[in-house]
Image (cartoon, rainbow over all chains, first blue to last red; front, side, top):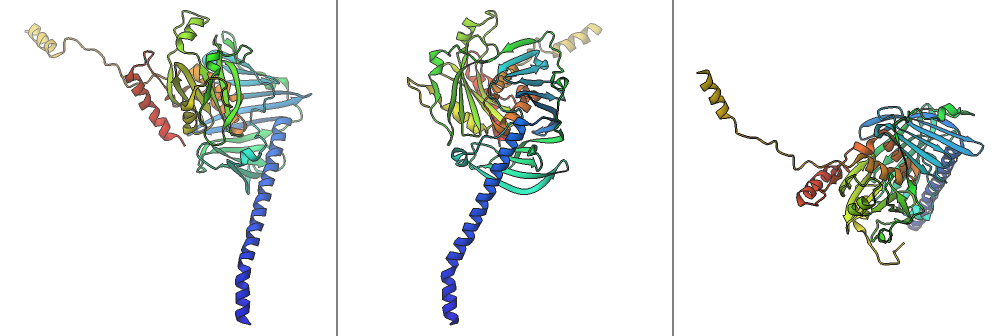
Length: 347
Length: 96
């Protein structure tokens, strides 16, 4: 009898294990769904609520204090992001136009930004395409700024992209703390609120730039109706890291240049990389607004841009630059694969 | 006598001297140029990447931080390109 029981117990082990596994997987799926729901709440809060906060931006051992003011009034969104330290730079978004005040460069950049998300950055809806390259999960609850917080992690499955950790206020779903992490979970950059208020109303004065613009050069840049030269629009990346695909290709005026560049955007659904293909220096010099200005020499190499990277190279005499909040190898990979295609270019 | 001492001192110094050019020193990426790329890219970046990018732009880090991208000489000489490669290395090593 005892032997029969033991034998029967052996039969049951796989079923029990399967049951436990199924339960565990079910709980994990439930946790992921819960995490997704919290990210949706965060997106909603970031886009629709009024808020005024001060946060620290920590990157590469440096700390910068910034203020964010976001107002939604009669369906119109106005935002102001201001550096409270050093540079004195400010960004102001007035519904569909972004103005970037750069007092240290004596420049003001203006660019149309229709249908653009809030400065603090909402996350896209997690579909199957994103799930293929990221794992989303809920981590144990924590506290930030004295408030109970949900902790959500979005982990990359490979080394071509970064992941996130977010601490969301239990009451408002606002991100009180966010971290950008590499594929090993190491923190690269973080944003940590020191103060966050969500007032019913925000005065116009809180959204007005403090920068004095006398003597500054105003530059309008952005997409242009004038197409890029055919030679530029024939350029595409011939190879891409897994999951990345072309989402945008448009002519783009860069910093008041007289000749538009071709702007290609590659995305995996969460991370994005821009590729700019510009005419060669001689062509730019011929069409320059100020003919006396010497043509800029071609760029080659890697530059760190906060947590992301920019990589420049020259392809068949054209300047190719890839920029993105991705690891260095991703911008290098994409920039090196750019080449001119005979029509039609691949999408 | 005094004149002899002065002549001796002068004789020890080389006749001419040229301050060497630091051939390996890479030119920095033009600040405004990098800012323009990052600003244009920020339109399409999403999520926390965008907020981090804007914070980087705001702090001016895009202008100066590890601007290892070197400018190869306009004549495209090999030495300039070699120095550019050298300059790129540290940033590559610190890449996460």
